[in-house]
Image (tube, rainbow, N blue to C red; front, side, top):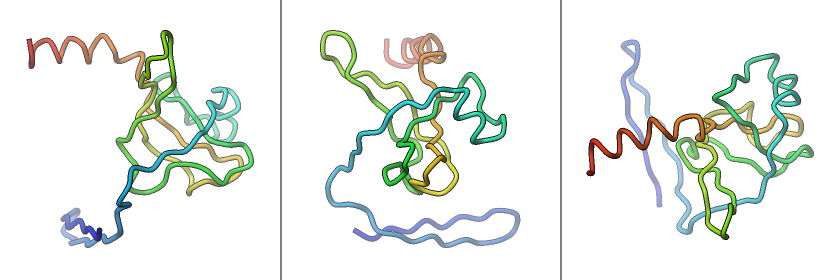
Length: 119
């Protein structure tokens, strides 16, 4: 499926095109310790971010994946969302893991908003 996005920013019109996968995509990656990730990104990683990828590269999120989930199998074999795809330096580069919003620090806020909206 082909898609396009048209938007205006700073009085410039942009047209971005691409192709969507016809089936859901997934990849197995690993959490990267914050201190390691912070060295790779020169101190840009803060407590509301987590990093994941493969140290050798080759598997990662990429453009178009932003907002997608980083999940793991948690207690009682239930899936839990740990992160939200945010940014990275290229795609699947060795030593440049993907950077995700760290979800747990926001759970109380998310729950409070969900109660207001849905309950």
